[in-house]
Image (cartoon, rainbow, N blue to C red; front, side, top):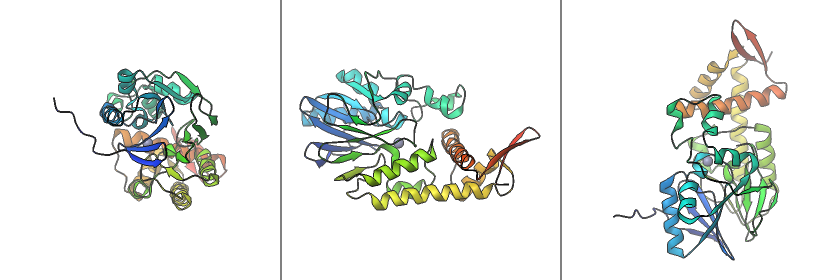
Amino acid sequence: MLVPMPTWKPEQLGEHTWLLATGVNVGLWEGPDGAVLIDSGGDKEAGRQIRQALDEHGWTLRLIVNTHSNADHVGGNAYLQKQTGCRVAATRLESAFITDPVLEPSFLWGALPFRELRGKFLEAKPSAVALILPEAGPIPGTALEAVPLPGHFLQMIGVLTPDGVLFAGDALFGEEILDKHPVFFLYDVAAHLSSLERLESLAVRWVVPGHGRPVPEAGALIAANRAALQRTAEAVASFCSRPSGFEEVLAELCRKFAIELNASQYVLVGGTLRAYLSWLCDRGILRPSFEGGRMLWSDG
Ligand SMILES: [Zn+2]
């Protein structure tokens, strides 16, 4: 049987820390009693490639720490857990989605998702979470530290290694990703802005975004991420200068940022738009009204 070779090689970022660039960035920290992964890639195939890299380097997988529960970050969990018996660790809210992954498309759609939303892109295979992590502080049994970075998802964390590498999950996107996807997924705009501030305050050797290349100094990338968020917020507010329904605002947003919708993009961009509407509403910039069976957003 042909065993597919990983298309990437593990890249060393610190004395004991590696990057496995599977499409989604996966971190690996060599602990004294085995390897710890930070996220696991998007699917079984990513899990297989990670397994191959582990074998080639003689690493024994002990634990997967998930930064958050999105399918592209936990998709390799089930395969790796079955193959190696490793444990999985995540924060409390994220662990609910990892244990019962139908929650992700359900959460995005707001009801039982139709079949098209139930592929591996939004719904990973279930895996068992053995260790519920605090949002901040030491990750038990390792020398790793959890850094609270909520906003992109409910209770996302970054993971900081003792040799100074911060795996930031999707609190930060690489420049090339921002160019392609200027409207990135958010659940809580205010929390995300605070997380960007937290990232700014940390002195580390490398910051690894969930998607994109690692950067030794994250200041410029943080500023680019914040600017993209502000452009989206300003656009959403401007589309409501006359009372507009959700679908109208979504259509304007897609036109402005050249977003092509399909079922998955509809729930991801739609969820993100709802996050901005909540944030603008709570700051007194927009308000909802109801007319003729429609919910309308306006700045009046
Ligand atoms: Zn992601």
